[in-house]
Length: 130
Image (cartoon, rainbow, N blue to C red; front, side, top):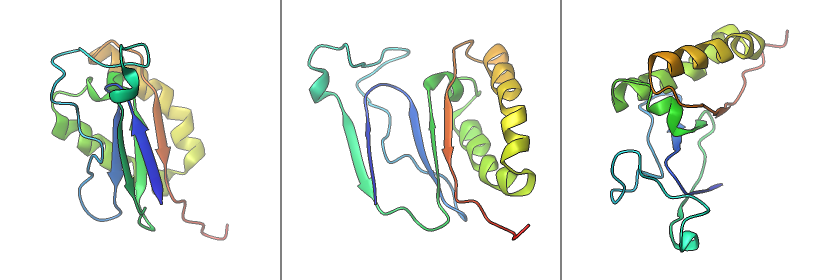
């Protein structure tokens, strides 16, 4: 079981092994542009979103700051990027991805939002016995 809570404009995606990713905590429709809530907001305790679900066996979870998602031309492009990470991890391995990820994020920031970025991917690894 997963319990997730969020305040602000980061992203949380459920990425199933087969199928499109989904956001269990959608963006707050009351926020416009780059406006966001934070722990410093007045009445912050009332601004949290939360969700609970059972994580599927092969499901990955992606958490990121808005700097990453805002660096893509569209929400669909960000979802394609997010969906590409689990298979890439399976094919290339964690060490290869860890080696290249900082440069990828720097490039996305420079070409996109210019904002700082944080990315966390919880992914079930497939052990090959090697």
